[in-house]
Length: 403
Image 1 (cartoon, rainbow, N blue to C red):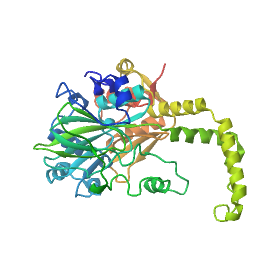
Image 2 (image 1 turned 120 degrees about the horizontal axis):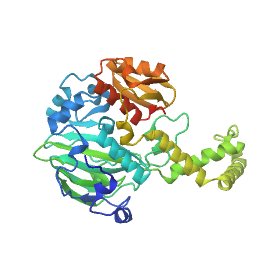
Image 3 (image 1 turned 90 degrees about the vertical axis):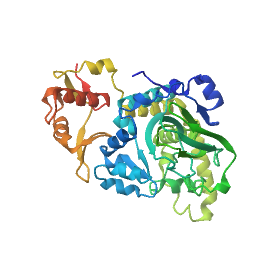
Image 4 (image 1 turned 30 degrees about the horizontal axis):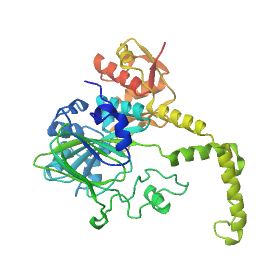
């Protein structure tokens, strides 16, 4: 397929113009010049093919949005996704790029171009149906319409540039509650009353090949028209100044013991200690200002992004992998089995590579052998599928070519 990147998605707008006029500022409808320009992103084409694909995916990747409980998908039987869809529910596949090589490549191209993490969800909505009520997202969104038509209403933000992440304390488990307690929106991002709406920013019908940019915070809702609709929601998860300052603070705290000391006993409850508390606080802020190194923080964030991407070789290198190619693990690998007994996972650090349970013998072999050649893998593989499996593990950063 033709390689797609961020510049292709926003064409004919030049990136410089897009970032100057629209990025984080306002929504934008981009009409596609070819209705099928996003078709190569998914092997499955047409609603039935996509629903059949969703039925084969791990239960945790598929959500039913609507009156049907999301938890019911965990017990889905063959064709259950189609049944939910036929009953009027929207089907959402989370992290669809994990199951589509072209989409994974697009996400990585966007990450390289923008410097932020990109993930993709797939939405299938029956005709004359709406998946979600009025809501806003806390990340930048590019909607890529695959087929069908969907009517969108986009409103100016109630909260401009809402935070996706607020650093929690060790005892704070509820992410939404943390946002509220730090001064964020009390009602959350999914509980919006029509009386709160700001002026309409954009109203448009997306057709196949169209792209819609939604800055985070812009309230929106969408409804499929006379036919079923499918679109990919490409989320760009930006790194904010708050994120950068959090990294800076952690770096300084490991260099300056004062920032690692506990607060004075009773300081949170006893107003009498407030004056000394304020003096100590001022000293900590001064230490942070004096020792902060933006360059070190940038480098740490870059390294974290690189580790997350597990930088893969180019496709020419992957094609060089044959049944006699020797590969080795890129670190300590472990095998996990899902609680429901249907999936096996190979882990490397925080990364997990999930496959059906039939792959568990191959996973155990890989975890137990520092290096091996492709045709040694146990399991019911054809030569072609064994090679594709090893190439995928190399591409995702779990294995590397030896020599």
